[in-house]
Image (cartoon, rainbow, N blue to C red):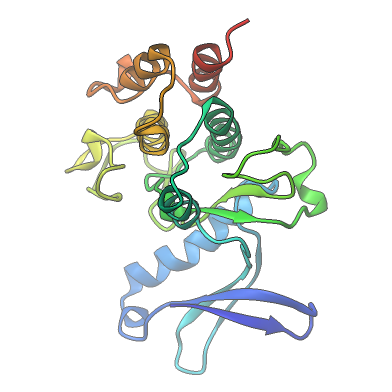
Length: 246
């Protein structure tokens, strides 16, 4: 459960994510929950939700005190815009792809695979902490405004490539889950490339955009990982070339 709260020491509004009491008795789930906080801190850099504290309630439930993403999820923003008749244009797609690629690349540079990129796990916040130096600013877009940045959340399913390079269990959000995560399989950063492509395809559906973008996304969602783009930077370059050619 996630609660909005006021941290009186920080004098700031925060989010408190607390593990359910029944799950707190399961050592594996408990450790995974705490590991999420460690993973978020490991990535840092303003591209993931900031962790302020880790603690335990009087009922022995672990909790994380997190930065509050006060502009909601990408899913909520897009669904609201769709209801008003909006459809993503090339500039909207570029703004989204650039911020998503920077955030995912930061996760990969930390030696992690997110494994659950979905519209509900992409958050928007208007804050610009000093740690976000170098983050991309958005041009005018109804999707991500100039005073907002996209951050990743929910690293509870992430995979540490340094600790385990072998088979992982199934997981991910339906519609944004690569084939290799539908059951036990080998997962590397190209699983996130598949999910990034699915996210962009979801965003631009019913939009009139160049056919070149369809080819890029089709490659990113290839069943065989080795046929996909090798990393987030290559994926972004192909998206940019398709939407904003020289």
